[in-house]
Length: 300
Image 1 (cartoon, rainbow, N blue to C red):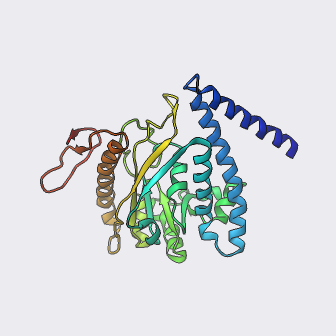
Image 2 (cartoon, rainbow, N blue to C red):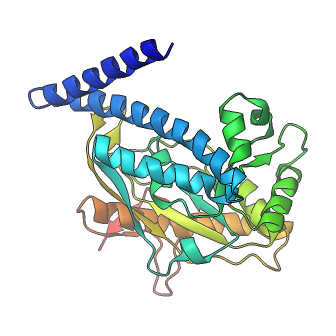
Image 3 (cartoon, rainbow, N blue to C red):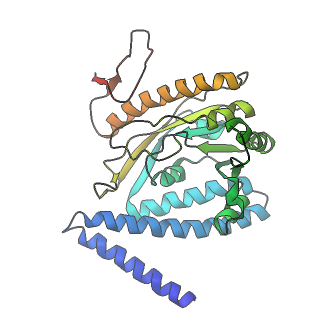
C-alpha cells in the first residue's frame, strides 16, 4: 500500500513540476500547476495536523492544534505556490483579544490559506455537529477543539449557538466564522448578505467581535478565468466590537453596522492592493457616516 502511495506522490509531484515548466511557454499552465500544488500542500498539512493534534492533546496544549496546523499550511503554500496573505494588525488584536468571535469575508477556497496566515492561537473553526463522527475529518476536529453547532436540532440561530457560547466561555476558546455563509467568488470587492449566527454567538457569550477584512484577490485567483498567480494579499484586522450588555434584540443592528464597516474597508483595501485610486463609498458624508453598498462608488 505504501509503495503505491509513494508512486502516486512521485507521479503527482512530477506532473506539477511539468506544468510549472510548461507555464514559461503557456501561461495558462500556471493555473493547473498551482492548483495541483495547492491540493498536495493541503493533504500534507492535513496529515501533519492529525499527528500534531494527537501530540498536543496528550501534552495538554490542544487549544493551539488548529493554529499549529494552519501555520504549516502557510509555509508550505508559500514554498509550493508563491502565495501568501500579509496581515495588518499593528495593535495585535489577534493575539490580545481572547476569547472572541473573529469574522471575515469569504471569497474562494483559498481562504483556507488566509486562515493559515492569520489564525490566532487558542482559536478554532465552527462545524456542524453531524461532522463529529466523520472518519479522519471529524476525528481531527474533535482532537483540535472545534466548536460544533447543532443546527439540525435547533429551532433558530440562538438555540444553535447556545452550546457554542458555553464552550467559548468555559475554555476561553475563540472561534473564526464567515458570516456570508458561502463563498462569493466575486471579481470586484463586495459582500454577500450576512447571516446572524456569528453575532448571536458573540452576544450570548459576551465576547467581542473582531472583523478581519481580506482584499479582493480575483487578480490572484479566478477559477472562471483560469487565473492562479503568485502574490501577496493584504488582510486588515479591525478594532474589536464589544458586545457586553447587548441582547438578541440588538443582533440585527449589530450585523448591519458591522457589515457596512467591513464593506467600506474591503473597497479601500482592494483598491490599494490592485494599485487603483482609493474610492469613497457613495453616501460618505461630512459627518463620516457611510452607507456602503459595494456598487455605487465615487473616486477620491
